[in-house]
Length: 250
Ligand SMILES: [Ca+2]
Ligand SMILES: [Ca+2]
Image 1 (cartoon, rainbow, N blue to C red):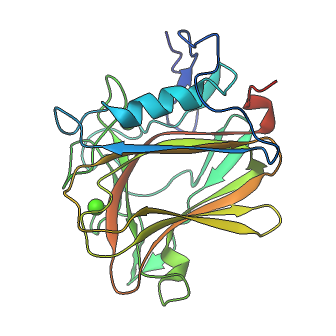
Image 2: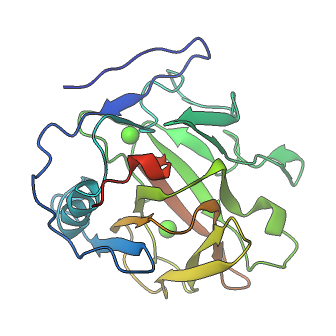
Image 3: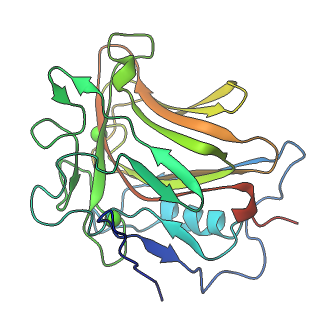
């Protein structure tokens, strides 16, 4: 069962009640450092569905969370086509966290806009697709060239305030280009860890789950970037983020 309260700001979110949550932990114990990574990828059968190892890994991730949190699944986020033309509101408040996706100017247009490559889509597009059960919509992103380059300010990024202790999302269509695709996780103390999610040369349409919990440190930003000279289009859906109180560990 789920709740779909409609906010005055015009978007709808799903509440994940985790009704079938396992009673026992199915993944690794939380180490002394507090950080546990959950990630897996596969090519769904049939294509453009949420199926396989990535789904199994998400289920493992969910056993570490306290039920009742909200999920950003992009469903009903503006209707019609294009289903989204701008980020309004630019901040998504879920589970007590304000998550902001910057939308700076890019070659004279807002970075996320319906005439370039960035939008909430209602149909599969070039290997990017919805992963929400019963849903259709997802956020399409484009990771630009390497950090430090001319487009660093436009790198696909999410800022969290207050900083988060857990995160999980489906990413679609990683790796169907020639460069390295990296997720940078930036902690509240400005330290960061880079996670290489693909070294390129793969078929389109891959489904990836990427998530973590950390009972020690908190994180203020996630940025996606590529090796120099390339860009990578990817979808994002069913985004979960929250505070330490959302993490269920002994
Ligand atoms: Ca969705
Ligand atoms: Ca891609």
